[in-house]
Length: 428
Image (cartoon, rainbow, N blue to C red; front, side, top):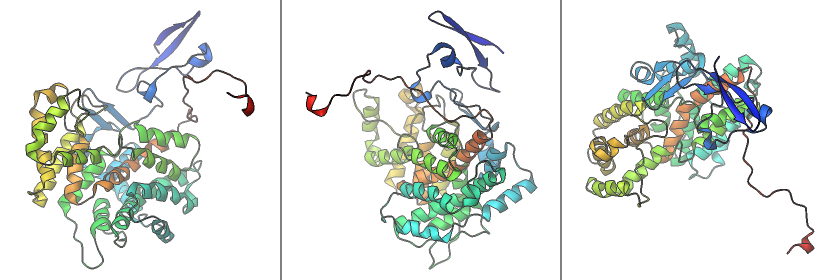
């Protein structure tokens, strides 16, 4: 193993350099504080590897996203979401027999305890669906005591299946509650995504027929959002799990983090931007505003913190978005007209191409979900539904890692030095 030398005052320390399967080398600084009395300063942990992982790999410069080594393009084109779930959880694609057993287990755990209905009744009808999701997912631990012992491998497996299976049911209930419609129970004869669409859009007074084009499009969206390495919400799940918290509580923490506009709310922000632009003829004005360094306006849904090339998920979502718009025959929606025109300009405009501000997955997924009938308040809920399997896989990997420790980031203290207490009457 190679190493790097660090000199501090009169001390010299050799730090091991670790090699991943692919990707940059990593300097192991775990012994730094003990040997020198200093630690590193890295706001946002953007230069720090917090764990070893075999699940997801991203190369932002080349625009690469791999799940367990498989390119996201191949999984989205040829696979389905539950197959991707199995891959993320177990490390390999399932055989036909393994897939059938996994699908059966998930399908037969989609019901939630009937007393969960009372939780929904406690919310105001205008409550944000993400607020409902945080509360209800955390509450699952109060109903399923037989899958909260994280030291029991069987209980961990049951919890994983339950989380993947029940998330669509809870998400659909949150949506139905927000629009004042009765809950629709899951139907075992339907596939995972078709079942979710039916629970969201069916009503008791008439039969609902799932559109296979829309179901496939949403399934692909779920695949694209299933995991994305050590992002903010995944790191939150791992940090919560490092304390020994039960899996339902950990996923609830991840949902709360995902709710932030800088993370899961990006597609909602992109649609709000399109609404602000209003009409295609207004686009040149907003393009000029985006190019003006003195103007606070920013084009949402373009560029990505990790990807400095075209987001590989965006290419797939672009195709999916146009398939959905064609299938639904939407021609008179000003918002979608703005999106399509803005997409064409951004892909050709020298300013955007030079700065690599390509339309990202949030731009296209927002358009697609709106066309399918989901309100913007549900976008992050759908993101949470898809990301649940990634969170669970990362949590499982962390729990089974013998070197795992409770998370404890350090700080650079810049507050007042030590001072003595003064009685209130003596303070000026």
